[in-house]
Image 1 (cartoon, rainbow, N blue to C red):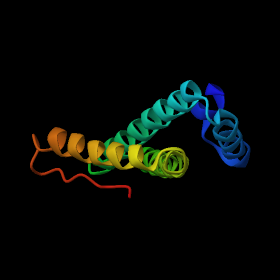
Image 2 (tube, rainbow, N blue to C red):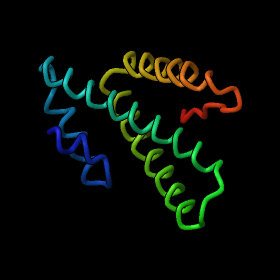
Image 3 (tube, one colour):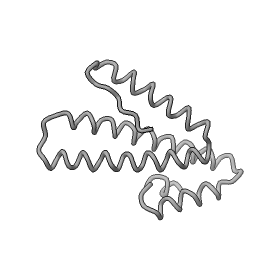
Length: 121
């Protein structure tokens, strides 16, 4: 179950998530584990996205810029897959997680006024 949560890639992984959510059913421990893993995935992909955007503001060789753009694309895909699944599993938790992410980004990036956080949602 955890392996499919960590991959978050392609149709097969999406189907594994859906199966995991369905198999968790009313088992509170499994639902909680899925919720925590999805929350971690949202956090990691959201901050990965932000830092990749910050790095793009630097003068970089073309290949490095392309790599960052690929990373940004992957972070967005992972974020929205996890968001969709957490929204199905626990919509209230999704709202709290996204508000928390925005608060964390603002607090972290407020130390550099020239940096503006980008939101994924």
